Structure formats: structure tokens, C-alpha cells
Image (cartoon, rainbow, N blue to C red; front, side, top):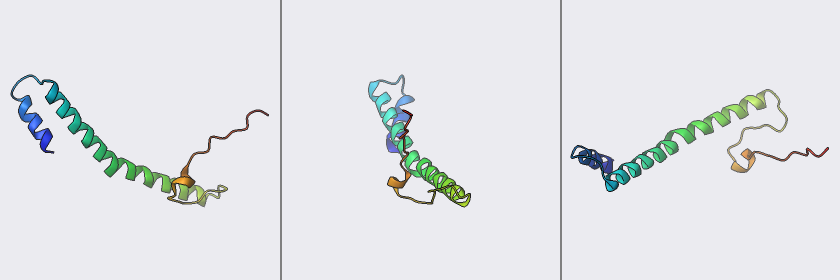
Length: 82
């Protein structure tokens, strides 16, 4: 958080230069990455688990709840040459 605070102080001094722009961009990217890790990925994983449970309850063949990345990979194989 400190770089963003310093960047705000520099903005109040005048027009931003390249260094200030880079500092602000870096701080924004770090905040965005932290948000993704702390909120988005966890919410996405919860939705995947909810969907798996719902499909398993409905009796969809081969559907089961899992947290294994290998089991969650999307299969793109299609034999369309028939």
C-alpha cells in the first residue's frame, strides 16, 4: 500500500511523469493480482464445486465432486470425421 500512498502524494505535486505512471501501474497490478487470489479464484472454485454437486445429484454419468486439477480438465476431443 505504501507505493500507492507515495504516488498520490506525487500526483498532488503536478502532472505525472513516466516514473509516477509506472509506480501507479505497478501498484494497480499488485492490487489486482491480490484481489484475484483472495476473492475471484476462491469464488470460482466454490462455483465449480457447487456445479459438480448439482450434476452428481442429477445423476449425470461420470460426474462427481473433486478438487483435483487433473479431474477438472476440459476434454476437447471430438470425433467429427464420421
